[in-house]
Amino acid sequence: MKDFFENPALLIGAPLLVVGLAGAMIAILASFAPEQRSLEPAGLGLGPGKAPPGGQAHGGPSAAEYVNIGLVLAAITGLEVGVYYVTALGNILVPVLIALAATKFILVVLFFMHLKFDNRLFSTMFTAGLVLAFAVFTVVLVTLGASIT
Amino acid sequence: MAYAAPHTQPLETSTGVDNRKLLMWLFLGSEALFFGSLISAYLLYRNRNLTGPFPRELYDIPFTSVSSFILLMSSVSMVLALAAIQRGDIRRMRIWLVCTALLGILFLSGQAYEFTGFYDRGLSLRTNLFGSTFFVLTGFHGAHVSIGVIILLSVWVRSLQGKIKQSDSLTIELIGLYWHFVDIVWIVIFTLVYLLTGR
Image 1 (tube, rainbow over the protein chains, first blue to last red):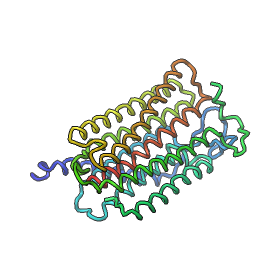
Image 2 (image 1 turned 180 degrees about the vertical axis):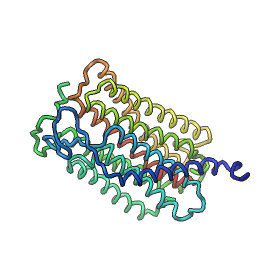
Image 3 (image 1 turned 90 degrees about the vertical axis):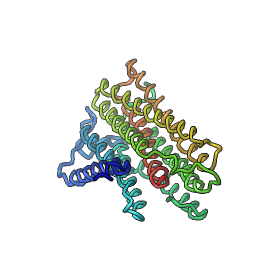
Image 4 (image 1 turned 90 degrees about the horizontal axis):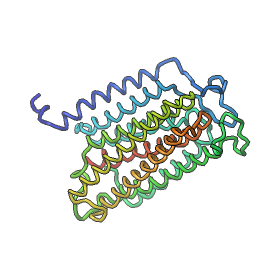
């Protein structure tokens, strides 16, 4: 216990790890919630899941759900930093950190940027850029011998 | 605002979607390539230094984690601004917009503090390959955040002048898309640049 309080990495990392794990648990439990609400701007008069004319879909999370997603994102960030200080993870640290970052990335894109609810054309445009960037730069990095650790 | 037609009206475009929004997504797709090139350059060159300082000597992960948290929370306030204008609540939209701008300024202040600390410890744009690629990558990201803050404050001032109405929600949505993109780029930078290479 004495070592714990003398080690700044553990002092910072352990609470963040606990908060992060709690957040991840909340996120997993929330994903099993049966109710899926859908809000639309006032005056549109559309039912849930129906896009307004012109493909401008605006159904999506409520303000409270946005806040919950934000809390999950904050918890995952805490988990990332906590995991960073766990030396025992060794070789699996890289995939764990990449998976956590990918989860945050996907949550922001799907819910905050509304790609989950919007016209597929927008997803296609954005995904095309991402896939092209990932493919081109993976080839470049592998060819020139870079590493991410 | 003549340019912001209410998006509840049918859109007679060849794609069936609003061209401004389509253009924004195309722009964000191209930005993915732009930041991809800068991140790749960093990953390629950061270990090819002949002289220090090196990443693990400089990075302060707890400090950068707080910066990341601030930028994430700015994304939450941005999306709450959009939700507010879609409900027709202009007053709350103003509050959330200015919150987003302030959180962006706080993030930039943290970045300025970090850059100053690195410079004081001997790392500049010309010190080594790590310095060049790190400052170019995070500097360009900071420039994007700065542009976002200017846009947010401009819209906030226009809303105070009564020039932003519920029918202009697409304008806020487009600004939000840009702001969230800046956030997701930082999610990637924080993991690949700080967490994975700073250990």
